[in-house]
Image (cartoon, rainbow, N blue to C red; front, side, top):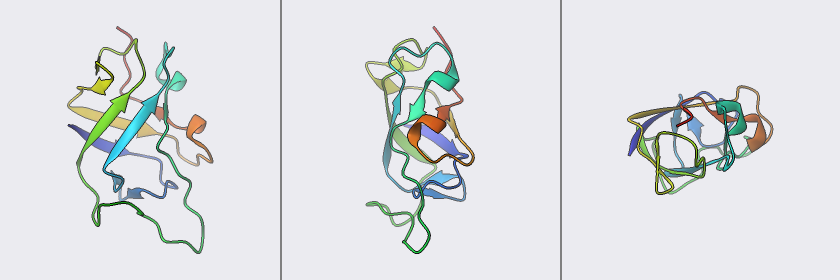
Length: 106
């Protein structure tokens, strides 16, 4: 499990840069650069609704990350094996506006 730092402040699962979802999926099967990836688990926070909706009551520093980015050096059998992962996408309104900043082409 990787230590996850999420910079997508308007994601419903983000609480103080940590994720409350429990696990995420990084998309980008054909990615050559970090901007070709995305956090497919992103859900935009909506005003008037509770945030942090998941099975976790508190955010976790470490998280299970499934990964479709076949060209990333940290992808091992569709699982992220990086020690630390950064997700970016400040102001994102959908998952395609997020990215795995840790992505490195193999």
